[in-house]
Image (cartoon, rainbow, N blue to C red):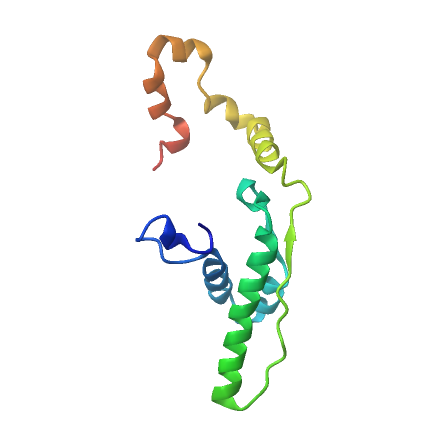
Length: 135
């Protein structure tokens, strides 16, 4: 699904390696090399077997192809750009950690619904949340 999204839905055409590459290419030119060398993955989907290796391989192919096209067009051989992908060492707990940080924020108490409010208003209470008030 991440590398061949059209298998899931014909409207989805952009694989994850292209999304990462486009994000880096839209960054300032003097930051791109370091960004390619510091891609960090985290989250439940990255737990899929060989996800990191496949992303690294496909992203490296994109970078190498771009450098090859540049060499063919200019005659100048650019310095190689190694792609390095690392995993968050706490990836199993990242979601919990983020939620914990959010919940420990002093303003959080005005954002959640109490059990009593839920019992009084029912499930529709979830449609009205102060987090989304300004949207």
